[in-house]
Image 1: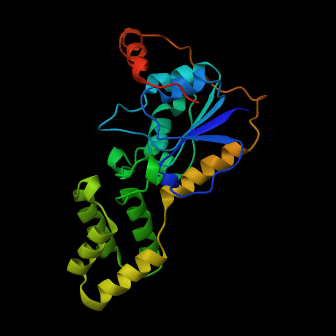
Image 2: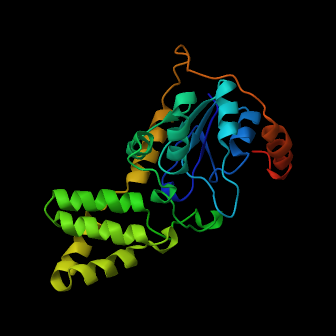
Image 3: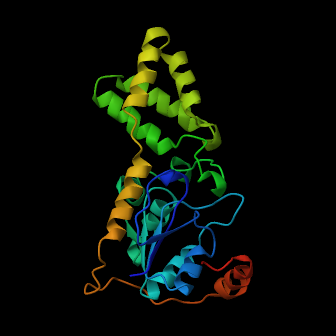
Length: 244
C-alpha cells in the first residue's frame, strides 16, 4: 500500500526502509497533497510551525474521511494525534500518550530548531521531552536525586525552546551541583541519554512497515468543507507544491 512519512530532525541520519516515501516536515497542505498523490497510509513525525503555517487539523480529518490511515508520533505527529485520536487519527508512543492524557500540554515539549533539508534537518537544539526522560532515567539509576532532577527540569523549561541545548544544560548542572559532581552528571547524561522522540518515531516506522489490516474498519467522521476550508485552505493550496 502506498505509504509516506513526513519527517525531519527527529529522524536525523536514521536509515530509511524501502517501501516508504520520505518527505520534509509537514506543513499546511502536506497531508492533503499526500492524499491527492494517492498515498493510503500517511505518517507524521515532524512538522513546521512559526515561520510556516502548520499542518491543518482539517486536512487530516479530510484524509481520514477519505479512508487514508494517518499515523502520528514523536513531535508534531504526536501533538496532532493527541488532538485527533477521537476522530480516527492513530497515535503511537509515550509522547503521544502523555499529550493525550493531558499530563503534557505545551507544544514546546517537542519543539526544536534545525537545519534545512540540505543538511538532513540536523537538530540544533535539545528537546524538552528528551531532557525529561533522560533526567528521570538518571534519577531512577541513582545518578541524581529528585531535587536536582526537578530543578534542572525547571531551569530548562524556563528557557525558550531555541535556547535549550546540551551546552545550556551542562552549564545549569555546573551552577547547581558544581565541580566533580557536575562532571559526573554530564558524563552520565551523555551515556544514558534517552531520545524519546526518535524511539517513538521509529515505532511509527515499524508500524507502517507492517501490512495494513484492511479488514478492520477505522472509526471515521463525515468531512464537512467549512467556509474556512473553501475560502482559506483551498486558496492557500495554490502555494503548496504537489508531491512527487
